[in-house]
Length: 314
Ligand SMILES: N[C@@H](CC/C=C/[B-](O)(O)O)C(=O)O
Ligand SMILES: [Mn+2]
Ligand SMILES: [Mn+2]
Image 1 (spheres, protein in one colour):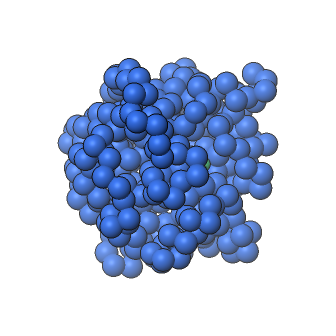
Image 2 (image 1 turned 135 degrees about the horizontal axis):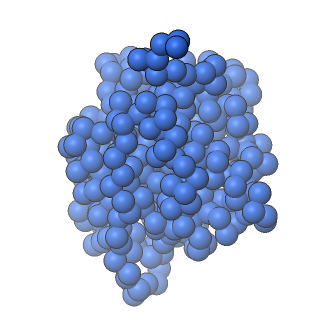
């Protein structure tokens, strides 16, 4: 496998500054070197350059809609280019509104795909159901075919082609879902493994059922959108919307290992690391190193050990 790394230093899908610093922090923590050491070819496409748009959209429901519309369009084009080069894309966020662009670009490149959304939150509010107006809590609504009748026309988002069917979406780790989101998930029959199911079934069974569900109608490329706040805040506190009762480090790594070994993993987002939300340097380091470890697990790192295929004892 080969990884094409794209940095997306963007924060306007939510109100807390700092998340735009994460791409370079994750690189500085050694992601690319560690990927290469475990035998993964890596190409770094650098950071997407985003327009600096002021919030001049009319105040109303959706916040910073022009900035997010512009940024996600640019990211969509960048992801498409990396997929055309034949890599599995690694999108380093930045906030989770970026997934609008990464999933859109991925679908433009590969067509029909599955989405595994690992997150404490469902991020599926429509602009009209959102109580915060923050687009990082709305990302999936712009992409799902079945929700389009309920979406207002937003000029900055007119470029988006819905590209995900509800039956091709699975959530893992939910524990802070808004009433409107819960209504949508039930209405659309979306497969959800909340933290209750993780407790009840265990992460191995959750991932087995996730993969069986997604491949039952034929294997499709998988887009893994990993929000670092899916992991328990005791492990990854440096994030914008922490919620107690999250995935352990081991469960988080297991999810990545399991999807990595399917051979279907075609794009990965790692979002919502925010160094300004860590109380101490150790808190930031723990969050960043966990993000790195999750990505290494996506690309074949095994806790039981790895060795290069060509290795021979001296
Ligand atoms: N449901 C809340 C929280 C959104 C959380 C977004 B996150 O998952 O990307 O952290 C909202 O709509 O604002
Ligand atoms: Mn999220
Ligand atoms: Mn979240």
